[in-house]
Amino acid sequence: MKVPVKSILVITPDAAVSQAIGSALGGDPGLKVETKASSLTQLNGKAVKFAQEHDFIIFDTDPGNEADLHAIEELARDRREGVILLALTSSDISLAAARKLTRAGVDEVLPYPITGAELTEQLDRLRARATPEVVKGGAGARIGRLIAVAQARGGSGATTVALNLADALTGKGGFLHKADKHKVALVDFDLQFGTIGSALDLDEQDTLLKLAQDGTVPDIRFLEQSMATLPGGLSVLPAPSKFAPVDALRADQVAAILDLLRQTNDYVVVDLPRALVGWVEPVIEQTDELLIVTDLAVPSVRHARRLMDFFKTVNIGLQTTVVLNRESRPLIRSGVHKEAAAALNSKLEFWLPVDEKAARAAVDQGKPLSAVASRSPLTKAIGHLAKAITKALPAAARVGASR
Image 1 (cartoon, rainbow, N blue to C red):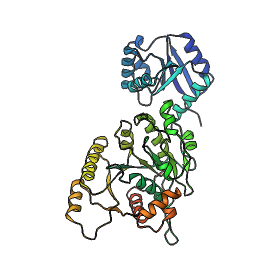
Image 2: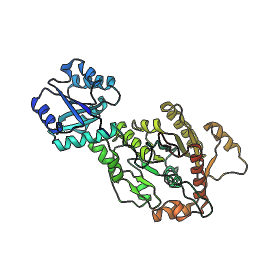
Image 3: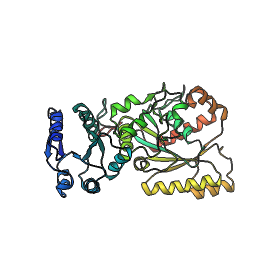
């Protein structure tokens, strides 16, 4: 199979810089390198034309130069879909200055001087993002289903729901009941207060924090090496063990993580942070079903309604399901239940009963509920939720192939 050639344009007035980049990349048959001896602003809009003709644009810039930032914004706005912008700047650039560049539209900030090996590694990662890998062992790439879990209030139990739903989606059958096996990934995007890693007794790791600090976009190999796999087959990307700013990640990094996981899994479950930061948008855009975990307290119901309305502005066709946690299904619904159903415009189909003993045992042993209390009413209720999701959203089909 012939490898497609990627075209790179290097824009810099410094001949030494263009020569160094040309030497570093010239031996790669998958890359075609062209240089322009100019600055971005000196091109007077011609850079936009070049952005229609190349896959990567590498350019010198100074984040303190307002004219440069304006030129980057124009380039980012008018570039052809899939074109990646890389900014070369001083190696002692501050985090604030780097964020200026990313807000202007830069995909990657590269400190200069940079070695040929480092530059090649960055381009390899970006090429993996631009040209996603096809999953081996099948007739095409997966398009995994994305389930996002949001909390109506702090302490609503959304993390417990996300963790055990992901576990249930793997397809645990009993002695008399067979279930389809699914490949499932669980991502804890609560950068500051995520507890999935500790709830499963996983080794501490800071993959998401490292991505935020480095400003890199992950490839599939990086993700596979970073994710923990449970005995039942569930893959987990936990929140950092160290505190990170809630806005530390970029939207393109989050989108890349989800793209890659959807290629390699039937279902991807995301535990959302409570804060509505900018990078949550690509999660909602890709979400097939949003679960809002709440109780029936009036403030919780009101906030759940506000969340539903907000997320609908991001994804107008978003399918939303309300999950009532720590609430037993009533035999006869009271006026409170009917009022909540009307306020949430929901049938209130999913009720997860209180089972403190089972929940505590699972946390103490660092295992999902199914592994320590398979007969618990809570475990069964989450299994019912998983079954409803797999029925509504059949397991990820492969492009060009039937299941």
